[in-house]
Amino acid sequence: MFRKSLFTSLLLASTSLFASTPVAFDDAIASVAHDWARVSYQTPAAEKSAAFGAVISASQQVAQTFPGKAEPLIWEAIVLASAAGSEGGLSALHKVKDARELLLKAEAIEPNAMDGSIYSSLGSLYAKVPGWPLGFGDKKEAQKCFDKALAISATDIDTNYFYADFLASQGQYARAARHLNLALAAPPRPGREDADAGRRSDALALLDSIKQKHGDQLASK
Image (tube, rainbow, N blue to C red; front, side, top):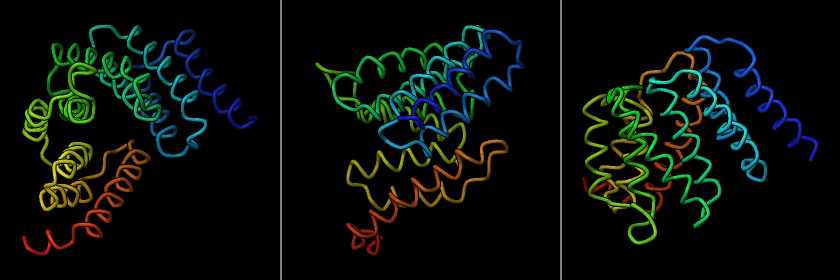
């Protein structure tokens, strides 16, 4: 309990900092990115909900501080989608719907922002969210979004991981493995070492699972 309260307090203090102290745009984005990585990859599952709540507040403050910029909207969407994934169930649907709206707003401002993150994030949402009547999930839309993301940056670690996850869910294990290897070979992102390490761990885990369960399909390709 103490650890949870301490961690949440630190994140809330970070949120308050945006409101009280002028910060540079890049620093504000980097702060949200690092907080997201910390919660995503270093925070115990039982503490994630409260921790993500604090990062959502911080990302909203950044978006308000820098209106008209695509990156804050993208990060707010990423944090909302991650929080929804951590929660699961129908209660998370409003978060993913809000995330999609934010990504569409960001697309209207700068479609190529953050190396195609708008489209890789939208692709992941369309792939994972339930379809009508519960949600907006749509596998065809997911494919279209991933195609756009890959056209912007074919070597991006997140795009290749999310696309591989989608392909694996469709039973396309050999193609999924190829994109996971591309994710693992992706060039490092300066200042995003924490996120890169976490995403490589995700990619390795998925690749290992595919090899164990569907190695015969990989060998035949």
